Image (cartoon, rainbow, N blue to C red):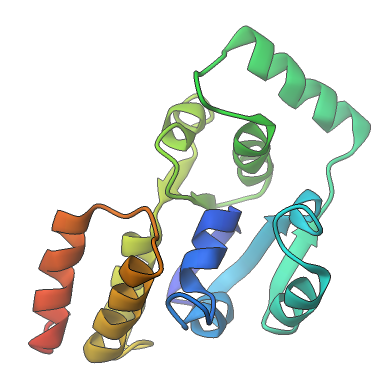
Length: 173
């Protein structure tokens, strides 16, 4: 059984987990029931070579059709959230159209969008928690990955990161 549900990832989460940051992207993607990202990220936020590698590890890039783009644009107009862009609304849209999906994002406004759709949002820390609890990642490996993310400049709550790093370094899940 997969340690993670069907997840729609934003680029911030994918970057947190990639080799240049946390180094656990393959483990994350390989342990989702289904891993999804928007194809509009390719080229603008994810280079083609990285996208190809992510696909080999199980990430599926999905497209939005014209009516979906119109629907997202309409939602942005009817329910504007300061700081939220098209990609944020699109992530939630894709997760809400899929069965049992969650959004994996660290952006503070995504949960506000998701609440309108009864869609759950999990961040980088929750993903790591689930992988450690399912024994996919050793607690020490998770602590090391999280330290790498912090050093690389990931936008994570440092107090909560410190608690996890301390716990995981002691071998606790």
